[in-house]
Image (cartoon, helix red, strand yellow):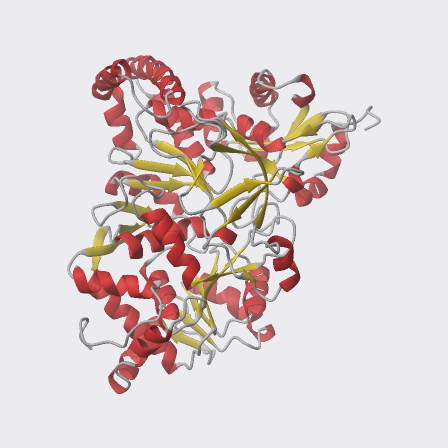
Length: 626
């Protein structure tokens, strides 16, 4: 079928019609790239759309009906986008699984969503599904992308991706136009994807997003005046590396790609992100705080290993960058004539090479979101010339809430509401509320949870607590500051309400601290469980000629405990006495998703942590009557 052949009239602008639009107007332009055998392979918009149609016909050949769920369990790669868009094209519902989900969570997500078909990346994900498949009566097919290790399996539910696409081509030849008719029949209110919540306090819930939700998000965030200014365009380049089942990566990869024609480059793996950033030098970069913290830690490790002359140059110009960052923070991200001139000199001596090495030399917009980040980390990047912005949104509002805008950055806040949206705080509790066209349809098969989240007036209750603060130009109450999650607020034995996240973020701004969990609810004082950053502490130990063998061995060294203690004391100076950490203990292991300590999005499960390390916690309160 020709890309420009006469088509039925569509009822809704969808992710599918947007992808098809780019195939029509720019068929030979590169839509995405992936690395294969060491070389970046290009996929044009025409090739992208042609594959989507083949895959969509394959779904029809397997009797995927309107509203049926198709699950995707894979790292970021073209097949993720093909499967997602093709599922929407036949009016199905895509369900993303995290690559790190263990078999037990795979069973829950596939069972709760009642997925009929699973697209699994490789043997690892296939094995997880087969281990639980007999308890999933709705699961009929498992399509595997990578055949290595799976070829010898003889389960009748298995089908190779190549065979699946071939089946789609056969169906396309026999039923030309069937996919186009489904596309034309799509309704704005159709549920098109289930994005499961992280499950920090209970089983994950599937948030239902509709065509209208995604269209609102694309128009609000990708068009002029949205999250990026100037607006994203086909000249922009992004690196896709965070899980695509998370709404933030879906926005910066799939939605920006379909909405603005942005070129997507798929990272080889999460371990190669730094290398891939340096290779492609993206213009728009999104990262969660953990990513930005790791970049800073990596810079500091390399600087410590440099020659004496290079270390001296680094210390000089990073001292300048610190002062530049302070000025930029005070001016909302805008340079003065003096700071611009000083930065130009620093560009020659350090900043150009530094930004190229970390892959941000061409970055015109960088953002941090999905969790709070320490202001010191934002200031660091601003000082070296990376235009960093903190943004705020969640799955339930299609990632649309607030953002710091270029020239109006207020560090320590998540910025201002977008045009066409309503953001408020509850006067009684301080809970942040949003209301706009991106508000999700509800939680899949959980009407009670939906009613608790969306009130009768259409306000979405985010569960976050915040307050309005003045903008960088003094404009009153324009920027939103998040203080914590409502469920995480600590009330000490003395009745003091304390936000643990601000203290934790300040601790994690240290290059030596990876995780920090502040404890103190109902207690007389605050304590903390702290996990060290293995790379930077290990590098420090080597320079101190301090031998160690394992993470546990390193964390138990008295010298390391003393090192972390100095960092805790430094942070304590920023807070009031009641907010200071009185005692801390170092964790003897790195926290892990499979051990139930972290969610798939690397968020700490506080209740699970306090239970798992109960003896360690209680040891910090020995001799205290709570």
